[in-house]
Image (cartoon, rainbow, N blue to C red):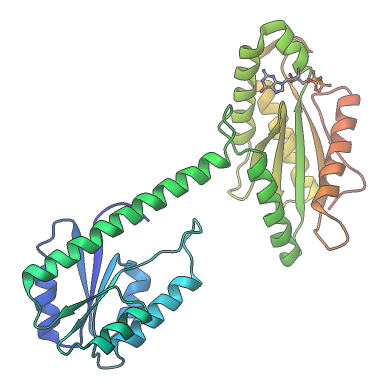
Length: 321
Ligand SMILES: Nc1nc2c(ncn2[C@@H]2O[C@H](COP(=O)(O)OP(=O)(O)OP(=O)(O)O)[C@@H](O)[C@H]2O)c(=O)[nH]1
């Protein structure tokens, strides 16, 4: 949810009331006011403006306030937000007649407060401000949650996705590619002679080398669905959904060349430069094989690449698409 002005929606079938409340709320500098004449229009506007607060008259021409709020809460629980936190939009009911029974029903249905009509401008603004304070806190919680999620899936040294992100993404992409009947390719990447690099230049230089390689690998991926993570130590792993083995070989070669183009001096390295070896495995996910097996297959190819001389990529012949 982008932080910015609060979006308020007033749902009232009386043109005069709607305008009056709208004008009153227009005094709030930090809010935009939207108006809807009935339940149907409210639902459409909620989808487009995603309001932070809704004021609903109890008697609408096509429905009543309680039904409408039930519909709104239903939709909220179905479509949770992109970061898995349910959004709660406060609802204030407006009603000329108000008894205990109605208040209880309204709150049970999902309303948060009531305002007596004709609405006092002072009370309306005070209640809306109180609700918006809570909305503001909800926004802060969402922002903190998003940030924490991001930190939890990022590698501290290289700032690229970490092993946890890799595991989650591989599981998700496996299912997605299986449903779509699409290929899924995996590339395991290991820095060559990295122990000697650390021994020769020190651990800090080793860290800088890993950071530069992580950037080079990331920049070699052009598709949004492709990702590369730090798999552990001096190992990285790229997930290429919807990419067949030929495509994966092309990506691996691009990554290999970009690491070489960094021209990081490595006295024990191939031609005295840092390099990586790449192991590729590809499949169309099915219920016969597992992501674990795909990883093992890519690891075997990586072993071949290492033993074939390093600074090269190898595709597992049994795992081609
Ligand atoms: N500087 C630094 N070194 C790391 C990090 N993680 C792992 N390493 C080092 O990476 C080295 C990996 O060494 P090996 O697994 O023997 O492999 P290698 O020397 O790269 O040799 P080959 O893979 O066979 O080419 C070890 O010395 C680890 O200590 C890190 O975060 N920073």
